[in-house]
Amino acid sequence: MIIGSGLAGLNAALEAAKHGSVVLVTKSTLHSSSSYWAQGGIAAVLNHPDTFESHSKDTIEAGREFGNLQAVEVLIREGAQAVQELIKLGMPFDKERGEFSLGLEGGHSARRIYRAGGAATGKMMIDFLISHVRNNPKITVMENTFVFDLVSENGLCTGANVYYHFEHTFDKISSSATILATGGYSGLFGRSTNPHTSTGDGLWLSNSIGCTLKDLEFIQFHPTAFYNSSGEVFLISEALRGEGAILRNSKGERFMEKFTQKELAPRDVVAREIFREIRKQDTNFVTLDLRHLDNNKFKKQFPNLINRIKKSGLNPEKDLIPVAPAAHYCIGGIETDIDGFTGIEGLYACGEVAATGVHGANRLASNSLLECLVFSKRAVIHASAKSNLRIKSSSSSDNKFLKIDESGSEVFIKIRNQIASLMNIHAGIERNEKGLKFALAELNEMQKLLEDKTQIEYYTLRTKGILMIANRIVKASILREKSLGVHYRSDSVSLYDEKLDSIRFQDEIVQKY
Ligand code: SIN
Image (cartoon, rainbow, N blue to C red):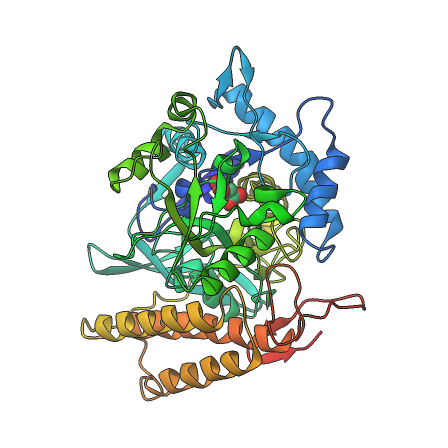
């Protein structure tokens, strides 16, 4: 069973179908995932003069040498193979005069970003894989199916209990191996580039059967998400800066000029600088300037994105585009090894929900679609090696049912909105102890509202889930007292001088590094 239908989930399903029958479960539809919304592309080294070493070095430097260097090696080398395989399968990456037109993004020292439809790479990759999934008789797709409980028997995960939204019915799905590919939790922030479904479900589901969560304080903010006063947010791909777009403050000044890589400095540096300009100028946004660029070329290169900007009433040939940072990618998640193994027999995680350590403390642009391909395949290979053994040991305990109390949906939405605002203000690009402790106290108050709700009810369960994740993000941000990568503590900016480990949560146990 694969839970989640972004790039990691779809690829895991296709890989797993080579070994047996597969159920692919998603709480929404196959087209609703942050992968589908991904614009920039997928980074890979397929040709000289670029090298694996250079891509690894960029990845490790962007990540501030924190995390798992072995995972980086795996990502870069196996990622190149995975992209090559996709090309062989017919994935239509963009070409110019018969050659792949490779993009450049922040922190990369070479043009190595494969794109499709300009800035519609996620959509085109997902559509491409969906067509393969739909045509594979070994894969059963279950949309609008919410997993509310992972079944664990004697330290073994044997499947999941699910709720079918439309039918209002329940079922238990038994599986010899379960792969979580449920994505990240950026949707918990008020400003996010992710779909609202990015609520980190895989984290609370797996934590409740003993998985460890780690690195939750590392949340990457994309520097340039569209801003307007009615709250419309969508990603304005870094690829535009790769082609020469310039950032300006409210006085029209190009404020990134002081950095060697200018607008293409690592993403955390650009996001923080924008945040500071916004505060300094007392506005809500800075602007992206495309006016000096060859607009005909741009329209051809990025048709979807340029249309989206135009739909919002702006003409990139004449207007400056308002942008501000937004929560974009979660580096933290379920701790796994480089085979996606969670430590619970039969349970794997891959893609954004997993924390392999591959991104260190700051993810290099366009490494996440790559991560999805590489680690989903590894998880399937590892899982299938032992799955015969496991299916025999699975007993058939009864289905679980959830009470559904529709009045709970109001509480869920109210608490979700409160969390979104707390996270934006106190766990955003810059954090400090005072703000984080305030946020923690507020979260504890919200938690109290649910204390008498002991019955397993759908909305209560989901509310408890998002509260738990918000609580762990804030606790981890308090515990990591100095700044590192995307985690920036404005009250203690000094750098670490010792070798660092992750902050982990297993049930209620907090292990400090
Ligand atoms: C972008 O298109 O700027 C996003 C790419 C990424 O998040 O890796």
